[in-house]
Length: 191
Image (tube, rainbow, N blue to C red; front, top):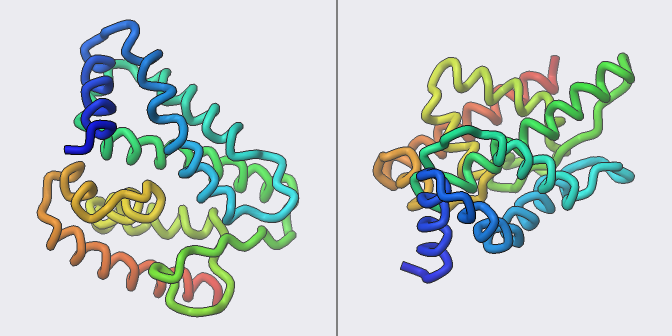
């Protein structure tokens, strides 16, 4: 196991056990990866966005610290939860902008080519969130696979470890979810 991965896992487990200094030692170790994840999210935001990647990391970090007694499994679990928080923060901001600007078009968010297999602009973040929630109502595990793989940037193996399923199942769920989301988002665009 990679030394930094092992270090993160050990610090997360110490934090889960209530060790006071573990969080202070964990923060600098995971900051760079959290910032990279935030930059990935922010690259899909509209130009002139007032929220910067650093602010997104800080807000997600505050929410993570506020989580009481989380039983962190490993590094992948931590970054999966971090990705969920970042996504929620951005969706909350997008919904807020929509409320303020009723009737105006929300800025498009372009997803990676693996998720949207067409060259047309991607759906907005609110539409994607709505589609993921609809998928979760039908099949929560497949929705979690998308969240961990796409938003969390986890590998197939890391996703399998977090969800306690096989990598083959992750790939099957990933393929199904991509097709389902493409259909849902395409339907939303055509409405």
